[in-house]
Image (cartoon, rainbow, N blue to C red; front, top):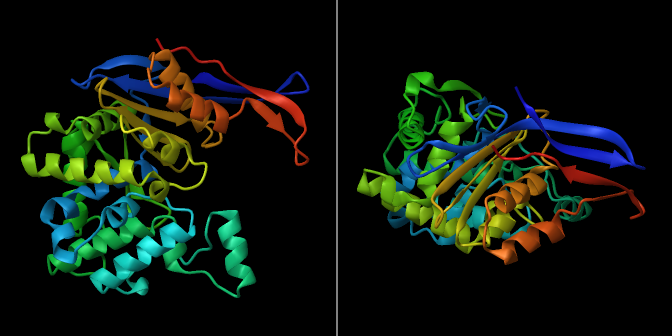
Length: 332
């Protein structure tokens, strides 16, 4: 059963309750802390992006197209359409000689409000490049091009690259492929459904690639996570939880749509995954903060930055404090 994670009060009265599940695994993939059901099955959504980038990087995508760390980081991104994101994506298109229309993700406006407003004021329009998953799509398309595989149908689960992604994910998560559920994500890619414990295990290996048996995969993981830590703003954007956490070189973090979030700790050799049952993302910052505090995380700069960014005050449109948010879960 799910457990209450966050409560919201307005005028001292309870207004909203957000329930969910949390799983923490050690370097052996064993559950060491949890809330609710640590094996609750959830769709990975965009939390899978760092793993979906592995096959291409492992095969030599960087060397083939002369990619920079910025362009690797944006492959893992749920970008907000800010200038730094668009620039990295346009560089990726230019270097790989791909066409924007090769992507199956829908033409979109930037998710960042300021970027969207600026675009519309200048007479701009929706582009596939502005879709938050564009980096993932371009990375996979570039890998298809490098291997002389069809670009058409690159998002089909039977495509060789998608099969390689699924195999890579299963290996990192220590779960047979047949136990991973499949569906279609919002961007048209295959999306995985698996226990939080398996997702946490995969993230633990992102932080501890020495635990990955295949040297080429371990090297690719190190390359991808290094790019994420060096360019955290490219992975999410202004004020996003994963970008803030990635500023800490000890953490790897990535959120996904509908309330799923995963992160891992290098020195502590832990993997964490949680799911907000109602699909909300607003609570991620406070939940991640609560987990780190209960784990006794030592980097107070990261703790304080999360506290400063994700206030427990609820403010109305005028900025008045009208309520508060409380983190009420305890890791077992």
